[in-house]
Image 1: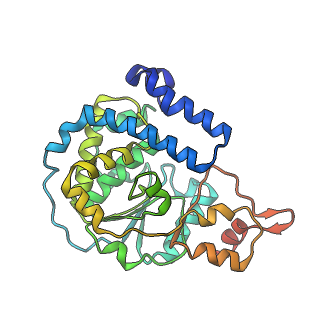
Image 2: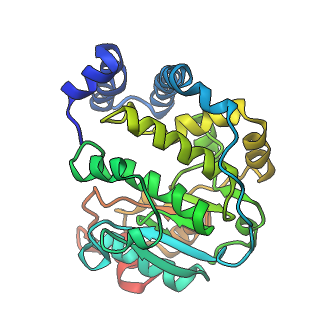
Length: 308
């Protein structure tokens, strides 16, 4: 990923101070979550203002022609790990295994070896990813919207532990994303780590148009949640997008419930209560989950050893 010098060159010191430096400071201070959310909302408002100024012209254009939107393929779930499933961390392997066993969907695992079989991306985007100017997180955002627009189906991140069958509800809309009180506190009615779409959906088409324009102009991402910031702009300014997003319901799920107890001693009733808060739970490969803690089986240990 491009360094801070490139970032300052493209966006100025002010954005670097707001989006990078202050975030690191606030994380070290371990402020309460509500204060961190308030700062994130402030930061993203600044980012959206920049994007609207520079890419607002895209709002007045028609998204690429809507393709036929058959139901076939809607229950195919796509998951992505660049190095390949066999080389993934244990938590990713466990999550992909849970997706196959519990989701009720056909599963396709994308990697560096096969993603071109499913999406056709501009050469300059691939070049920027391969050169390190674009991080894999940003690249995967581009892949997911291109994939859904071309094929339809489900996108789920590789660190989502699936504990139940995908509800029929998620396949009932042209475009759908899971949401929660936590995401709405950050002014988002969606999450980018669980999306479903019909083939050719205009929400995905408009996201693709933005990515193509943005990455033609830039060698780094202005913020980690670039996808959410632009989707927020679309929601606020394009009636067609707002209509699709407002069509699916608000929910009170908690897909972080298992992550919050993952290192604690396993207790059946506590585990079932947490797991029941959502049909999948967002984990991370960035933390060293332990199977035992002071000689006791942890929630992670139970998940890993019992194929939840």
